Length: 304
Image (cartoon, rainbow, N blue to C red):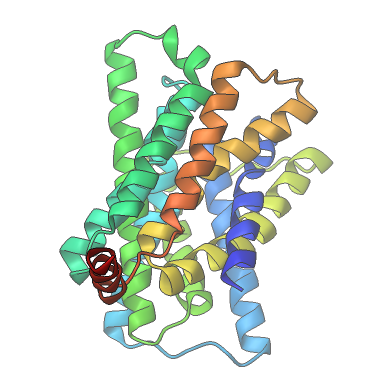
């Protein structure tokens, strides 16, 4: 079950970039985000009410959902979309993939979970692999003020994403399922972003054509309702640090789709990067040997 959720998340979020590109046009980016998560919240509430699975939350649960909505469905997206104006998409992907390490550190600080060595090593290999994958895109950019600002925003967005993971994990430990918390979180996130758009005077335009509506529906149903539910379920089941390795694999899927749809050419460094990413994936999901088994192995060696 975990493997199915993991692959589903990687495949969905690895292809949402196509829909995001199709969203560019008349509608302002923040407004598109409001439409996406507002509609996703409505879909989730409808499903939960029909199936009678909407869980009742107390004040604490709603406050955590409010914070989760702010981190995962508002600030996170605004940071990355703003950063993408100045920073190459490959570099943004590399920064976002550090979520594996941030989640491991946050789980240690807030939940007292031991940081597994294989997770750190796997995350490091994944970062190195992504660096090789996007090296041609990264090599020609200097550290201008705009690039540094974009990197700062991308890092802030990654930390918000990681904080949202921790909040979801906290809710699941309290017995609240991702379907319910996502519904409220998306509603809160969309509402706060809508208030921001109103305050900034950003018009709520709409493009009534197949391109925009089709891409919006893809982002709402697979990209948000299914993708975030699958991912945050993994956070509860596998731990935030292992689930976050999805962020390393998203760009790999995106590049493969680009090779098919846009003629992306694989190079030797890119293939080497792909190998490192997959090795990192193996390391992250390798189960550490229990201490007792290690001691027995050492004793057996001494007896020999």
